[in-house]
Image (cartoon, rainbow, N blue to C red):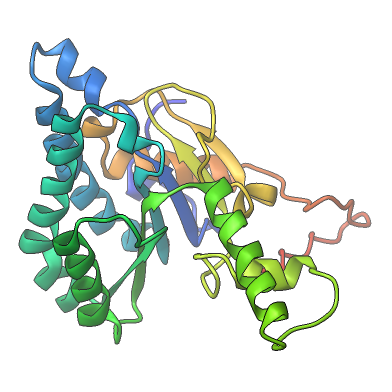
Length: 256
């Protein structure tokens, strides 16, 4: 499907929460004979364009996969460059995000992060905590399996402390995830033509729509995001049920 412009979209309901696996930085750079670091830097610019375009398309929350628990296995130079991009992104864009009403929330494990990165994350969250126009969630040092394990361990700790009792259920487990309190995920997008979740939002993906786009992340922007909205509008979401004729399916009630 060709990319759509925001102006071409019909006013039918669109996704409120879009999650993005930002894939293809390395391949973008390699095709141009550039070091991978350049692909990551251009990917930051794509993120800025996408965050700015999202509210105009009716999206209220973006969750982006910034750095996974598995990314520590990459070469030390590349990991160092990715950490440097976090520093530069916050330094260059935090004031704008605060001014435009964007709340920044970082998902994932804080343990094991460089101390200055942990401090940057805390500053970004604290600076924007009062904002409520748009939610930007950045999954950093995040893995879907790790997040589920951590949530289960939190419940075990509560039981051992005498603060919880009874069997673990879906609602209780979801309340222990790093995404707890956030909106349900409507659609998960992966760029670059790859078609897998790569340990991203495994719990939250249960009833999310999946969209795979054949565009490398550094080339991403408003038109590609508008195409996601249009694809979502054409989906029939049933959440495991089958509504009676003429009755629209009810939205999922569980938080993302």
